[in-house]
Amino acid sequence: MSLTSCLLPFSQSATAPLTSTCSCHLPLSFSNFPVSSRDYYSSFRSESLVLNGGGSDLCRRFCFLEETGASGLRPEETILGTHLGAGSHRAGDTPYVSKQFLDGLLDVPRGASLCIAVVGATGELARGKIFPALFALYYSGYLPEDVGIFGYSRKNLTDEDLRSIIASTLTCRVDHQENCGDKMDAFLSRTYYINGGYDNRDGMTRLDQRMKQIEGVSKANRIFYLSVPQEALVDVACNIGDKAQAPQGWTRIIVEKPFGFNSYSSHQLTQSLLSKFEERQIYRIDHMLGRNLIENLTVLRFSNLVFEPLWNRTYIRNVQVIVSESVAQTAKYSDGYGIIRDIFHSHILQTISLLTMEPPISLDGEDIRNEKVKVLRSTRRLDPADAILGQYKYTSGDKNEAILNSVGPTYCAAALYIDNARWDGVPFLVRVGTGLIKHRVEIRVQFRHVPGNIYRDNIGISIDLGTNELILRDEPDEAILVKINNKVPGLGLQLDASELNLLYKDRYSTEVPDSYEHLIHDVIDGDNHLFMRSDEVAEAWDILSPVLEEIDKHHTAPELYEFGGRGPVGAYYLWAKHGVPWADE
Image 1 (cartoon, rainbow, N blue to C red):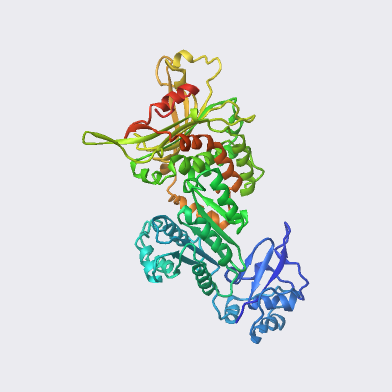
Image 2: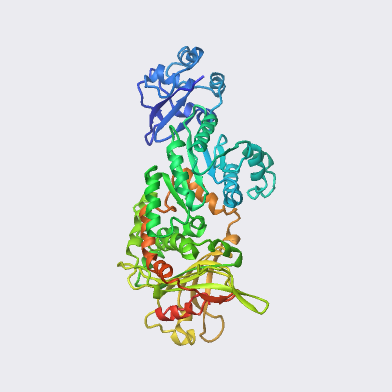
C-alpha cells in the first residue's frame, strides 16, 4: 500500500478553537483528533494539518482538496468517509477519528525520515566524536526513531563490523543510571555500512541505493558528514552532489575545518562545493564553536540591558581571547596546517565577530551571518609585526629538542583591530597555544578606568588592579565572572577587587551536550548561524594572509618556549607595544 497525503488548512482566532477553513460538508476541528493520532498520522506546521493514509480520504470526501503523493489506498479506506457521514456523530458535532480506527487502515510501516551518512566512518574523528554524538542525540530523542545511520569508507567491512566499531566507543554518558542498553541496541540496529573510494562514483551510487532501501516511499532528508582528508574533500562532495542527493527531501553536507590552506585554495574549494550544492546546503563545522560559551556571547549582549550600552570603544579598554591548551592537543597542529590555520582562522575570528557584531534583525542564521561578515570586512589585516609565533620545546636528558620537525607554529599571539565606529582603537589581543602552564579557554572584556576616580588612593599601587572586567570562561570550569571593586569589611577604607561568580556546575545540574551534539543538532534543524558562510571564510583568509604569506615566503621560524611555561617572550613585548597586559597573568 502507498500512503497518500493532503494538506488541510486551519485557522484560529483569539477566542475560537483551531478549525478547518476548507469547504467541508462537516466541520472539522484539529483539537478533536486525539493527540496520539495527530502525532502519529499527521504533522502540524504553519497552520496546516498533513493527513496521511486514511486521513487523506477525509480530505477528499469533505474538503475536496487535491491529494499529494502516490494514490493507492485500499478500497476499504473509504470507510473513513462513510464512518464520518453515517451517524457516527450527532448533527452539528465535529467528527472524531479514533487512533484505533486509523490503526486499522494503515498496514505498512513508514520508512526512514532522515538518513545521516558519515563519510570516513572508520577514522578517529568518526569513532571518537561523530558516532557518539549521534547516539547521544538518538538517546535524547533529537533524532527520529526511524533514522538511518550510514558509514562509508574504503575498508571492506560489513554492517556488523561497523556496529562493533561504533559499540566500542558508545557510553551511557547521557544517562547517569547507565541503563541505555536498549537504546544502544536500537541505535546500532539502524546503522549500515557501504564501502567505496572517495573518488569512486560507484561507491556513492551504492550508498544512494542503500539509503533508498531504508527510506522506502517516505520523503526523507539526508545529511552527509564529510570526515575525510582535505585532499579528498572535493571528490567526495562532487560525487555526493552527482549521485546521492535526496530525491525529494533536503540534502545537507557537513565540511570539517580547515577550509583550505590559504585564500587561493579556499576559493577553489568553495567554487567546487558551490558547483554541486547551494550555499544553504553547506555547513562548515568547527567543533569549538559548539561550546556553550559561544552561544552565550549573543545571549549576554542582547538580552541584558546592563551590557549592551557599554559594548563599545567608549567603555571597553581591550578584549582578550585566550585558548591555552595542554600537551595532549599538540599533535593536531603538526599536520602542516599549524595553529593559525586550524584554530585562528575559524574559531578565533568567529568568536570575535559574534562578540562585536551589531544587533541582527532576528535570530535567523542568515541575519546573524550578515552581521558577522560585516565585522570581518572591517577587521584590519594582521600585520606580521603584530603577530608572535611560537613552538614549544621539551627536555630529553641534557638535550633540548623542538617537539616538531616543521616550522608549523603551536603558539600565536596577535593584536587585531576593527576599524568601525563601535570598535575603533580597541585592541583585541589573542593568545592561542599548547604546552602552556595553564589550561584555559576564556574571553576577558576589560573596561576603562573610572574618570577622576576618587578612590584611586584606596585601590593600590596599580590602577589596573581596579579595572572592571567581564570574564566568560569555558574551561576548566565554565563560568561567567564580573570583577568589581568593593570595600573590605572593617574600620578604615580599603578596597578590594572581587569577582561575582556564576559557576555553571554549581548553578545547573543539566548535562552539558558535547559540541558535536550541539552542532549536528543545529544542522538537522537548519540553524546555520554557528557555521561559516563562504564570504566569511574568504574574509577570514584575507585577514590572516599577510602573516601566512610571511611564514611561507621566508620560512619564518617560530620562537621556542619551554613546555609548561608561559609562552614565548615575544608575547610580552607585544602587549607592551599595545599597552595591554595579559589579564590572566
